[in-house]
Length: 209
Image (tube, rainbow, N blue to C red):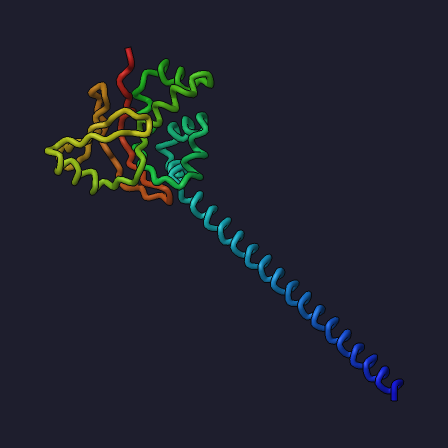
């Protein structure tokens, strides 16, 4: 009788041990499955984020400017000051008043050549930043702001100095701190991180004496 009881206990213990082992295997398999699902979800999320990043960069302010032949001088200036990367990868939004090649050709050659020199990178960056505004301003919003402010609308650029917008007939004109004007010749080139308005002159802030 005693032997029979011991045998039953041994059999029950073996069953319990086997059941415990099976449970551990199930738990391990479930954990491995969940980890694989987590890794797959992360991989899919990373791929989606990368696709969105590539799409954003391919439609960025920098990309739109690069795709516009008449803005090649400005693009070269942006690349020389590393601003092209900023305008390609940063979310913004930015409003860029982009001078055409003809606009840059109006700048005295000696002055332009001087600005393009590597040692004057900071000066060129300041000139470019005087053409950029934080936030997205469409031409319709600009016209409305001019009307709302009795014909002249002042706003600050990324550089910190002001531009003044006004109307000349049905055209929007920008005046810099020196009184020089530039007309928007093509408006509302939409980009993923902002908007571009093409202008016919290079604007300059007032020189500090």
